[in-house]
Image (cartoon, rainbow over all chains, first blue to last red; front, side):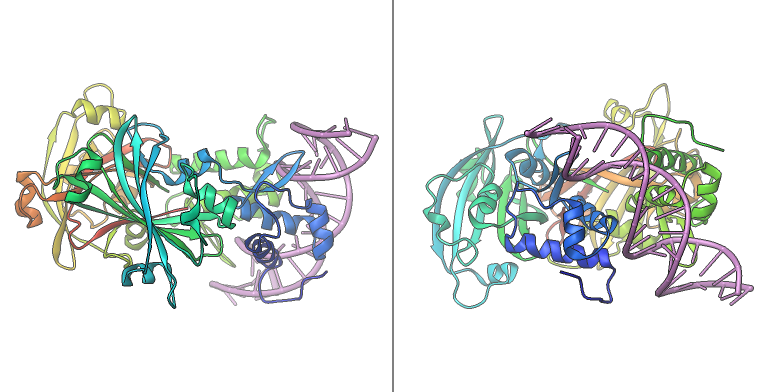
Length: 239
Length: 239
DNA sequence: CAGTGGTCTAGACCACCTT
DNA sequence: AGGTGGTCTAGACCACTGC
């Protein structure tokens, strides 16, 4: 197959085509892609052009390359997902892995706000999942996660939820979270969460509203987390 | 001049050398670098190798390239600095430009904490600068900035401080802030800042502790900001 | 028009991995 | 040994800029 001539650079066309295949699930996470030479031959371009497209995808965490072996679809592991998107840690400290306890979940119609954030139309229902996350054994976060059933069918029927939901999304639903948008407020801890966080109601807490974005650019999940920052901080390195 | 053979890839050696020149101020912000061909000839490598190094530096916001014109040292403008590092905005909103009022500044010895954060040794003094920043005319941030005099000699003698300090750092001191590390807490608004923010003492506010990092990797400034998140959020897109 | 960066190609050699 | 990605080179052509 040859690429039709277009207005965009060849490597960009190759990038778009390969990303499209990834989105469609043509290759599954941790699977190898064809070699650079094979792709170049298939698409009728030079190896260098394929390489430029592949390197672009690596920079976006869509692929991994291993010298002497091949190019692989990036896999969300417990470490990689949590390290990238879980920002709470000790001041001046390293990444930490939280433990998680699920408090419950329920189906309901989305609020207007949620419909907007998730780009929902029609009468799709959502699942509201309530979790507490612990750092060093202390409760640090109470989190409400909103999952559209149109994106995650019957996700509330899952018997076992992994510590990192993104792994479940990828393995069971073919959803790869590539970026998140966070908005942070300081607020007074609501009474209903006081027990779970072990803080008095009204204590200043960090509220993190997150939108999680799939490889195809859609917002597929949103969440609202109340974080105790008595002993922890939300750390971010802006480059 | 030819590059000595080493263990690192050529393009990395070129990258290191060009970055070193940038750090030393061999080229000033907004000045053009020699053309790719000229650099390639000077360093005894091919144009492609120089290009790879330059593109790497562009990706790090150290350089800008303009087709048909040349490659330029990146300049911190009001827009680019503030857009990149100023994270406070309206919920779901666009970037905003704050207005700034300086409340005062003083010289003193650094605290132990500040010495550690800024990597200070000996008996260097620091300047403590107090500012209020306004969004849409409302006071949104009270900020304490710590500037080592060893890095910024006589900075407290500046008659006019720009809205974006990073521009002053670059123009007057050759300091280019390339990244910042933020740590966020929720806390109760201290009494001494209540008036400036127009909130009751004890209100939940967002506290942002920032370390600003120079092109050479050193932390050259740190700050502590109390942000009202009644009407604004700290927004960040993690990729 | 000449000079610059941007794209694309083809080929060589290297380092790493598997068989 | 043969396949993979990683580096480096040389050369062609294009698009944009300024004289």
